[in-house]
Amino acid sequence: MNAIINMTGLALDTNLTPRQQHYLSVVHSSSKNLLGIINDILDFSKIEAEKLELEHAPFSLRKVLDEVTETFPLPGWLRSTWSWSHMCRWTSPTG
Image (cartoon, one colour):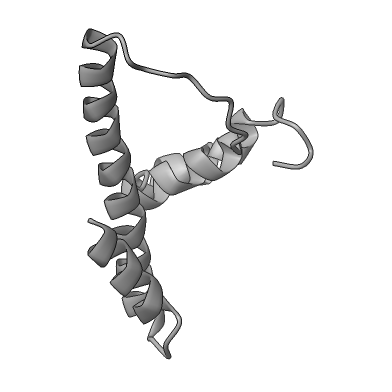
């Protein structure tokens, strides 16, 4: 997974068409999400072994939701009437 994440990251730094840029961005984002799922599964085994340590980590809800809509785009008619940013008005101004 790390190889896919790093190679798509490198590819995104090259000259690409907008379509290629979009496809590689989706692959990059999806592979990072898959790595997160794998890590979550490993965390479950730590929970069962009573070895899990929790940590506080800042994140941007708006950025997470934007990545979700990149991966799973809304239909055009829905996208024009409703957006994640509209739903996230209550999030902090920093994003």
